[in-house]
Image (cartoon, rainbow, N blue to C red; front, side, top):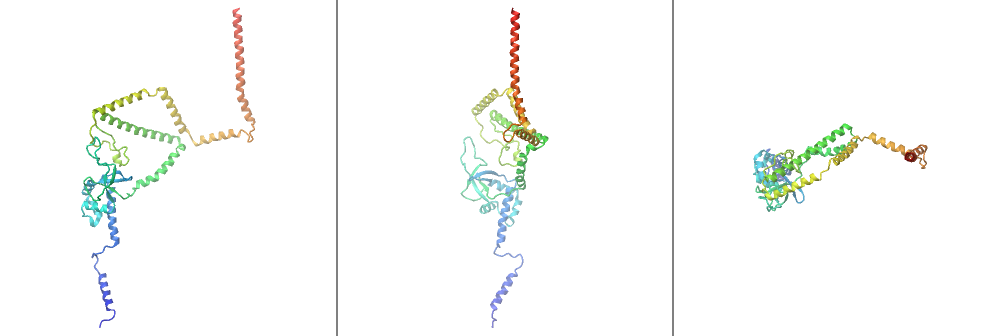
Length: 363
């Protein structure tokens, strides 16, 4: 006879055998924590790739939003040159580059885009390498053939940007407190800002002169420091001296001649209407007076001026009666009129005496 509850005991034994599975034996079902970790692996991989300096990227407008994007062929060449980044993917490190791109697309870490302007502009031989305006592509499949991909997640802010966000309010407060600085500190800030402004203007004028001269004479478009006015550029790209090769079509000689004539006419007009020495001296004096007022101002002088105004106000009674001091001042103010009257009478007497002397000489 079977003991009652024997079926239950057999089930318990089976459960014990299952619980005694050797360590490291894989199960058919993946726990939810491992699935979340697998998703985080591709997130970390995408952040590492985006922050890497060797992956060339640009900024563009996608549906009225500024996004950072890269080209498919650059992504392929980047992973071929840096295969160590695939180690972040752990078990998926052996995947092909196209498969990795498709997984990033499925996880909405990137989105495939296409250029808005698909026709050649007049005078252009080919489409722009980095378009400024993008739109979402219909087929979200990875490709390295003239395909663009934009990052969809918000990149983590680096430490220097966080420190800079705290530095801006301090800088604003320091600028507002400029009038109370010591005189030497004011002079240093004035000369430093003036020198920096002169350097920037000189650099811009030099760029414009070189570009205009080479464009008119040779038809070449050469911008020194080509990224100096760029909105999005690294520090190395910002101070890049020599520009890239000009791939645009050379302008016609008639257009270059026209702009050369315009430049000469503008130069002659500016020279003709330039201010003379007297006007420049007046302007320089006016500017120097303004600068001196700013540099020489101090809280002590401001307080002393307020005290003088207060004493002059206290010279009168609250009822509007004039004190003795004010009477003396009114008498002193009235004295110049009496003096002028005396001077006029003396002048009349002198004229009459001169006329009498002339009459006697005549007789």
